[in-house]
Length: 211
View 1: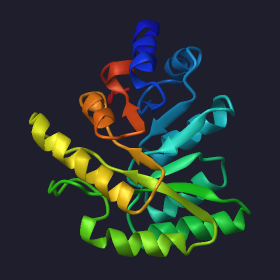
View 2 (view 1 turned 90 degrees about the horizontal axis):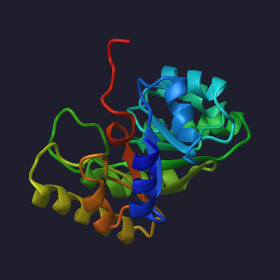
View 3 (view 1 turned 135 degrees about the vertical axis):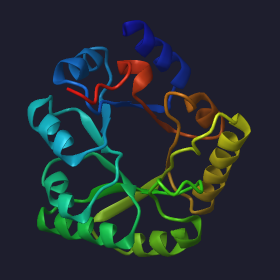
View 4 (view 1 turned 45 degrees about the vertical axis):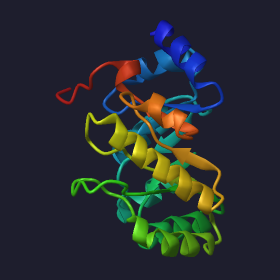
């Protein structure tokens, strides 16, 4: 594992590495933590909350999975570092409401649906202007950038084209962060302007969904 982390750090440079730890044990996470990684990503609120409550407080937790409004309270009352998967004004308003209650500002990214995959979540490109404008008017959230998941394909040209489009959108709105790229496509993502990559399998190995 040390060799993989060292390799990633060398490749990524100033790009933020988020170690995606869904289904992985606290022991597995601590092995990566002890190698100097501090940003970790989770897909499910219940699992994330459990890990936030038991693992070191200096971990920067990223919520990267689909977030339902009724689960927002549990994240916001804890020190969630970044919610990357905001895909509607309804969700943004709920996060803002809970942030006001807790007297804090919550950092968010808007998840953009960059492919035509009906199984993927995210704000459509057509609705993005409205969501960005509305989110910027909410007092207790801070919109830092955008997130996307590449199309499910082995065609690198299609993946690269999607990432190029995301970079153009990010620059258009003068946003700071662009979270794109996973274990299979992070190199392409970095070449196209990503400054956050979300890597799980390359670090932790295959997921164990039957634990």
